[in-house]
Length: 143
Image (cartoon, rainbow, N blue to C red; front, top):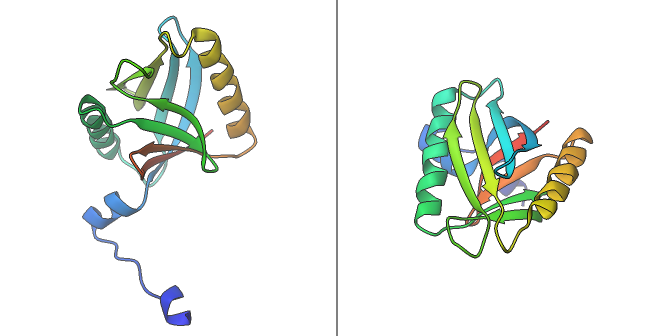
């Protein structure tokens, strides 16, 4: 049992990208379009890594794979490029990556606003939000 716990983690860049999620700061706000989350890199993360993540998220959603925002393993919001779920658009800005979740028939603006308030409060208490795609955690976002 002890041998299992002391096994070294491989730290090759490819394994690191697949195994461990990126850490970033996130601020959320409601806009006319929906819930806008701005992720900015933390010390150990570059804008290039964030751009790669942004491209990967957009590609995965374009193929119909849903992305989910979780807090302590509890799903907060699920977004996708599909019509039955809120759509999410990811783009790079000067500060970092901006993800806009756009409501629809299934998720009215009031519900988006409630989710925004809850996520903001939880992050203010030090609870990180995790951006999942399929079952893989892509980013861990803190206030």
